[in-house]
Length: 261
Image (cartoon, rainbow, N blue to C red; front, top):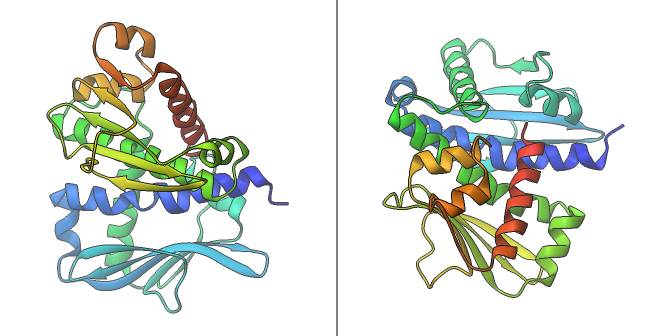
């Protein structure tokens, strides 16, 4: 039986985690070049009673476009028997492989699995990577995941997130790293509606910003190696806005992380 918690986790994996594979491919030349000249549709899905939930990627001469939902006749498809099996696989709790349709497109399948594995390994890091570019990519992925994840939980009707969103006037909550505008994300909230956006919010100053003085400082919090209060005291983390809003945002960050693991 599928529980509401299964649904919440599935929304996070489908709409917040898996879209990050495009970011990974665009950031890693050794993976990106393997899709050059490729035109295909890659789909990842799970059966759910009489319907199918999923996400697919349109590949046009190696360029990936993320499309929510399922489509007919993908070039390859990773199809799970159920939402719980889908969640267990992507959380690393199960190694049970999905049904692979279009498996004879061997090169495309291998390269897609490599991209998914690279993304999964990055998100599951428990200590900072040595490479600086890898550090920046990790923080970027997490900023995107957190902003999108909070919005997805609201859209899925998570009681805590939905209650917060319904009470909120028009506000913007942001994550940024000083001197690295490319590593930033924000979420817009207004009267129950939320929208996650990648990049810097430029229209005005956000209502609340979780600002890090460096990539390493962001890593310390995201990997739960540093204490948030201590980081704030040392100036590694600057809460631009009321501290109570920082506490609320921090709780939602932990909530998203709990579903994505």
